[in-house]
Length: 256
Image 1 (cartoon, one colour):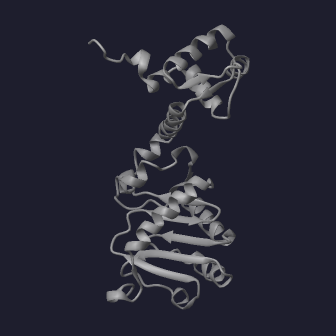
Image 2 (cartoon, one colour; image 1 turned 180 degrees about the horizontal axis):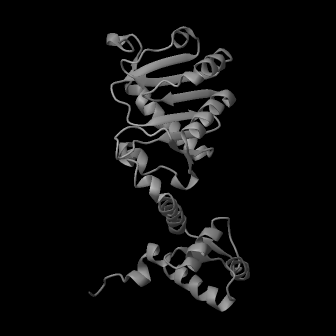
Image 3 (cartoon, rainbow, N blue to C red; image 1 turned 135 degrees about the vertical axis):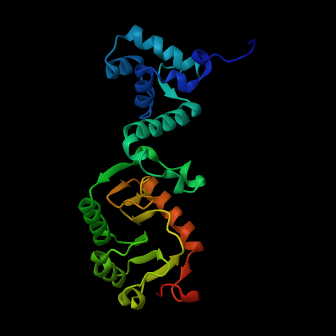
């Protein structure tokens, strides 16, 4: 069709289907590079790399400065981020194919920094990390869970008494420890439904999603990261639920 855009000429995602071009874009994420640097990094002859660079130039993914330095264009930066997300999804496909990401609100799902995440497996491992995160928190601890983890009660009470802001969202009807209800800097709210597990501190964050086969939140596996981007994402998501959750004591909240 006249005027139609051919995939091999205009589609920036298509251009990254070749490993050399993908690696070039990933390498340029660090900043401007010369042809010889790129060739050495990729481990391919300069004429071969030059051919792939020309493809990226035509797709407007990269541009060449006057002094011979290649850099990502604004489009290239977006494509690089999107590619990083896709790579993560491919690498973590066993987890993502068995856990329901649709419980994450769509507005948050589209901006989730996938490329910063790693998976943690094992009930004991996840539990140990939750305890360690509480112990090491210096500014805040935010938690959303339909289960009360008894092993962190004393830890979180101690951190709250030390000045750490502790906020917890639990399932309506769950009985709260009296320590939570009497400790300064420690607030509890409840929801009728808890869609996912979430814990975020000033140092680390993690989420647990429902297992598709059981429909229940799977706390034996979690997506975690210490990156500032993911921590901020989790804070925003937590605040979204905090705003609609009910304080303990309202309309029988927190009472069996």
